Length: 360
Image (cartoon, rainbow, N blue to C red):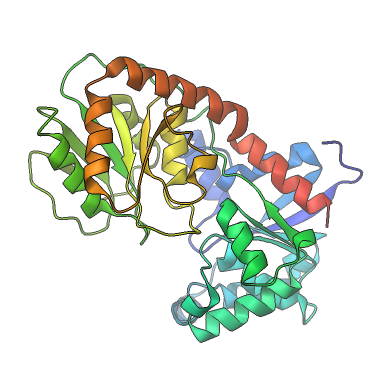
């Protein structure tokens, strides 16, 4: 892309994410990319990013937390507090609705330049509480551009939330493929399934059940699961990592035979996609729930194995078959590693985002 002009974008990061701290941790090889979501790469495509970087006092922080709790994590007080920095930019970029909905609402009272926002968690309007639903409708109508990383959610935003096609975009997820480099395969031994995730859409109970069933066909199979969610699991078969592993996930990918991601049936969320792409970039095959939109990222029997939602027996068969067929597992892993680098890198994602902003 050859932009006609350089845009100055205010990037509204979500609560608890600091670009300066992220860069320090990246230099220490703890987290991918120099900036959250790889958004420093925007500068290569005609967009100069300025990341939100401010903090509240204790009392204001409590008020902000209360507002987030009441509004479904919308960062309303944060938007008001940093209005001067926003006004100094050509455009405001928000990765998801936590920052995007308040920013778009702020355009109506001249507190913000045009807003480009991602949407990751909105479902059917009837499933959203009244206050978040009303704010989302108001914000979506006033956003300069709206994107989603889930193809079915793009359709949902058009059909159910009334976003015009001219303002609606699909921007695929991307990851740092240098950080998640292809891992060598460990010596043959006990087959290991790896998984991770903490959002409400994960179905770790089904995953554990599937691993226990797969052990009947694949002796010694074990699971390592990185999550802070409550999980009932038998000791000696399932190892839980309850702290965030960040870059240490690479060691789990290195030791894994395959990476399995069980997600509850749904039609819009991209839950698990980041973990899936990290695993593919690492050269490991993925077994994942075949919710709508997932096949855009993982091609069945090419990059991994997709199984029907809510079917622990099918999940168990897919795990056992891959664990018992290392040649097939390696072939799927190799295909996935090549595809992520060609289509789903954070470099490609930044290029997509920049294109959207230049089109506003």
